[in-house]
Structure formats: C-alpha cells, structure tokens
Amino acid sequence: MSIKLFLPALAFAAALTGTASAQHQHGTASKDVVSKGYAAVKPEWKFTPYQFQRRSVGDDDVLLEILYAGICHTDLHIVAEHWSKGIFPMVPGHEILGRVTQTGKNVKKLKVGDYAGVGCMVNSCRRCEHCLNGDEQYCPKLVPTYNGLDTDGTPTMGGYSNNIVVTEHFAVKVPPDAPMEKVAPLLCAGVTTFSPLKYNNVQTGSKVAVAGFGGLGHMAVQYAAAMGADVTVFDVTEEKRQAAKEMGAVKYVNSRNKNEFQGFDDSFNLIISTIPVKYDADAYVRMLKVDGTMVILGIPPSDQMPTLRIDSLLGRRKVYGSLIGGIKETQETIDFSVKHNIYPHVEIIPIQKLDEAFQNIAAGKFQFRYVIDMRSCP
Ligand code: NDP
Ligand code: ZN
Image 1 (cartoon, rainbow, N blue to C red):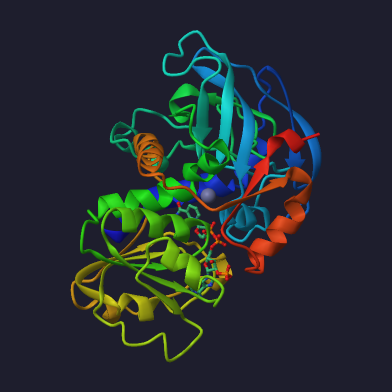
Image 2 (cartoon, helix red, strand yellow; image 1 turned 90 degrees about the vertical axis):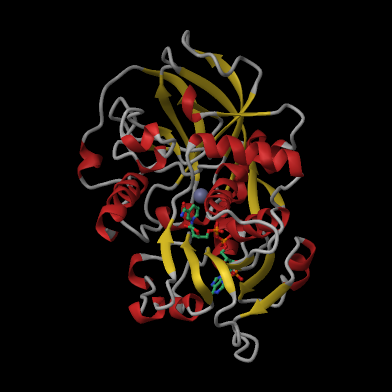
C-alpha cells in the first residue's frame, strides 16, 4: 500500500525538481510574452537579472502581471539541488499574486483587472483520477510552476518575474480588498498546511503539534487555532516564543532544551512537521496518541532524510506525507484566510535582496515569510 501511495508523490517530486530527460526536450512553440525576472544560473543561491520569453496566451490561458511573490524554503532546496538536478537558468517562485492583464477566448472565471494567485502548478492532465478528485498535485502529468516542462516542451519559469502565462484552471481568484502582499504565501505555505488540517478534521479540542515554526509552520498554527485546536509549537530558537503565543499556541517548546523536549509521549491527535532538515522523527511519532496521525510536509535534502523505526508506530499511529493541495482546496484556503483574517507575517523586499534573503532563511535569521515586491523588478 505504501508503494501505491508513494508513486504519485514521486511523480510530483520529479516534476517539481525536473528530470534528466526533461532537460533535453525543449520545444519550439511560439513565445511572444517578454518576461523579466531574476534567475539562478547554476545551483547556487545567487540571482541575476534575466530576460526571457513565455509562451503565447492560449485560448484557455490568462496572463498575469505579477505584483508579489513569496520565497518558500522549497525554492532554497530546488536551487541548491537538495533533492535532484535542476534546470538552469532557473527563475524560482511558486507563491504568486498578480493582476490579470489578458485572457484567452475560453476563459470564464477571470477577467482583465481581477486579482489572482498561482501556486506550485500551472497545468495537469485534468482527466486522471487525481485530477478528477481535485487532487491535481498528484497527477503524473503535473506541470510545476518552475523547474519543469511547460505544455510546449520548454522549461517553466516561476514567480520571481514580472508576469506569467497560466491555464485559467490553475489561477485562483483573490478578492480585490485582500492585502495582496500577504496573500501571495497562501498559494503554497497556506494551502499546504490548511489541507492536512482539514483532511484530518481538526476541530475544537483537537490536540495539534506543529514542528518547525517558519513560513509553513506559522500558517499551520494560525489555522489550527482558528479551528479550535489546542496547539503546541516545536522549534529550535528562543526568539519565537512570544510570536507562537500571539498566533494562538498554548505552548512553545524549544527542542534544543533537553528538559523541555520531553514528557510529550501520547499527547497529540495530529502532528504537522514542516522541519526542512534532519531530525528525530521517532521522538515526534511517539508523541502521538493512539490513532494519532503525523503529517510530513517538510522535505529535508536527500542526504539528510530522517528515518523512522517502524515499532514507533505501534499504537495505531499513522504517518503520511502531503503535497500542497488541489486547486479547489487552494481557493478554499484563500476564502478561509480572508474570512478569518489569517495571513502570514511578511517582510517585503526588493528583488535585488534575493541572495541575502536566501542566506537568512537558511541560517534561521528571519521570521516568517519574505515576499518580493515586483515593482522593484528592473
Ligand atoms: P522555513 O525555513 O520558513 O521554516 C522552517 C522552520 O523549521 C524554521 O522555523 C526552522 O527554524 C525550523 N526548524 C529547523 N530545524 C528544526 C528542528 N530540528 N526542529 C524544529 N524546527 C526546526 O521553511 P518553510 O516553512 O518555507 O518550508 C518548510 C519545509 O516544508 C521545507 O522543507 C519545504 O521544502 C517544505 N515544503 C513542503 C511542501 C509540501 O507540499 N509538502 C510545500 C512547501 C514547503 P529556524 O528558522 O530557527 O532555523
Ligand atoms: Zn512552497
């Protein structure tokens, strides 16, 4: 069973991170949308101005002028080839907020002037069982927003740029009065955490732990608290104690303090792990109550992957991994966030500060999400 569940995830990861064969299939379809952004030219957290062309706006597509783009830790992993080989030059960015400037003739959901968001995917087959179930992220033909191949066979380029062409289905509507700079991270950090909380029916009184209190983690805390859960946060620093409380957590644990990081066995119905580096997964699994579930969101580099003792699972404990969320869920995330006024804590930066932002995220010197103001794009 685990193999069956894992295959689509592998397909997604391969798509997200590009594949060796993918790098040799660049197509020749017409490209007339000029785009300006910042690219990494090799697997290093160094970005330079980069001009390129995107495919023409087709009948089912919209063209967005990008206003804001969030920086996700996944961008750090993919640029540095933590999981697999990348396609360079690479323009990362999959937390995109923009305004529609052109629509194809079949487009119905969006019109010129609307605000819209684009997350980690820009296309899928739309016919397989996963697409039909609203789980496009598990489609074997998924087209990732960057570091993959577009429908015309050319590499996709992400949101660290001034515009994007996307199939209408993969753009979600954003109400015009929403705080746009804070909406961008909802397209990945938001939906990735909202999805498993909803899937696991978190409600009043649920005991939820969030391990890793960064971009994803601080969204998980706010959503779980809004759903009525008792939330405990695990991170590795003293600096975030107060913020965790303000976001609705009942407890904050610095797991580097041995005394503090004990006594939690048999405590939680649900644990959401967003930790992006190697950690003691067994210690967390043992914190699950009988019938509890641990959801893996954080994906450390391949050579730092945590392992799990299977006897930690005794007690009908379950562990599964979850990838972002489908398009319907993404729209639900936006709607829930707007309704409950739940947004990321963001620091707005010009695109010229990308290198520094990447270094700060890697060094844990920053809370909670960087968002690029695309007006700074030269
Ligand atoms: P951030 O860097 O913003 O947050 C990670 C947090 O984990 C930081 O607060 C960090 O602390 C903390 N941390 C580091 N080590 C530990 C530890 N041993 N125990 C507890 N906390 C720790 O990253 P994001 O939230 O953007 O992404 C997190 C992970 O999720 C990444 O691996 C990313 O690739 C993955 N991801 C997965 C998705 C999916 O669909 N499954 C979607 C999006 C992201 P400090 O800052 O102090 O170092
Ligand atoms: Zn992301």
